[in-house]
Amino acid sequence: MNTTPGWNKPIYRVPIGKAITLEGNLNIPAQPRGVILFAHGSGSSRHSPRNQFVAHTLYDAGLATLLIDLLTLQEEAEDRYTGHLRFNIDLLSERVVAATDWLTEHPETRSLKIGYFGASTGAAAALAAAAERAQVVGAIVSRGGRPDLAHSSLARVLAPTLLIIGSRDTKVLALNRQAASLLKCEKRIEIVEGATHLFEESGALDQVAQLASQWFAHYLTS
Image (cartoon, rainbow, N blue to C red; front, side):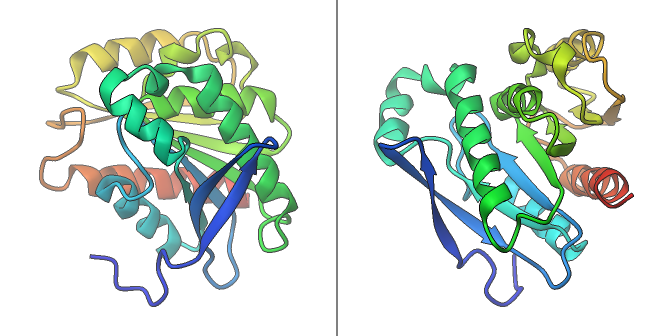
């Protein structure tokens, strides 16, 4: 349960081009050490308990967080039936890029280094966006991600990248190892023993949050 006063109450409308705006929650601690943009995965949202848990851990570590829905309400409703938008990495990465540009212009975050936290297909969107905004993205963490879906962008990613996978998520683990071989940046694979794809096992998500916190603290504040 998040008990920090004011947590997730600041709602911003982030413009995506001329016709679309997306809602996001921007939480900024005192003296932030960086800002982390969350790119959620298949069928998820900024209200995902898993993303909320990780975001709160990062916030407690002195990092600002922006949790944003990459699809509009109408698109989310459509995607529940078709499932095609959640795998449209070009669309999702364009929106991560737009949210990144918003952070570089927003008065409270424009001086902060930016990190990406991506989950599932959101990890591919984050990596593709990082290739497009290589000069402003300082670190990336993927949780149970599908970096293989960003295959054409992987060689252009410059930000140090941490891939976190559960040991029992064997298919995704294999895909992460393949993707890691294409990354030219500093990279590391962390395997959470006993964890499945959603890290629902006791203590598994806490390990993810701690690994992410350490990675961002090192690369965004050094």
